[in-house]
Length: 317
Picture 1 (cartoon, one colour):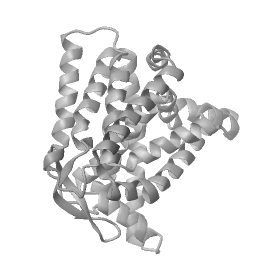
Picture 2 (cartoon, helix red, strand yellow; picture 1 turned 60 degrees about the vertical axis):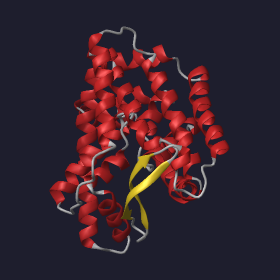
Picture 3 (cartoon, one colour; picture 1 turned 45 degrees about the horizontal axis):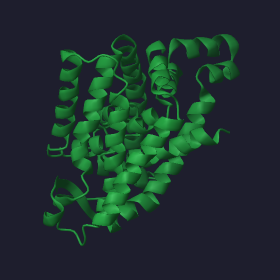
């Protein structure tokens, strides 16, 4: 067992559970992004299938990098559990502090990815601005009404799962926008009680996730190989545009009912500390948390895989 991979999976799991934070961002700054893309793209690819037919399960498992996927997946499950039982509680008690940490984390991550662009021109600058505008727009639109239609659940899974490999876009936030967050989480909860309809919903969602991963991993691998600077510029824009949802001080505009039947924030608007309607601005805690988020990425950059090495692997995938 590789403890480092499990820990990185845990970090991705925590990120994916929080609307506004992307597991793909964590994968990138921890140096496993290229390997993750290659493994996901290869699972259902001709190489793995051909190896399975020719040499058997053991060789196919190795060709698919099965140990990496298994350990990363285990870490993500643990991370999701940590997020459910601790991060969400911290968000209820000290929301500005938690958001400040992720705000610092994403700013530093955007700088980390952006500095890997080796050539700036009108195209890369335009894509940076386009990515920023698109991600910012996503944070301002009203959520759609959810549905348990199998086709819509399938499409929601295919769209939301792309955030696993797309830095700057949060899968849970996409589910919120599609109105499917409560539908999917509620179905997972009801499935444990033997609800057949809930099982169908979860099955279609999982199938959509598999199809989305198989298709999108190939697309983004191709763009990295063919247009590395342009792809990095677009991803950097996504991350910058998503900062609106992570601003520490947010006033609630509307709420939603979660799977526990509790009212939680749905739409929020960023405000200055003086206009914050919460119990406290936690100003000192916000500053410390923000600096901690910056520091984590700095040390990952300093002591982790070299940026040039990671991009080089991506271009060669």
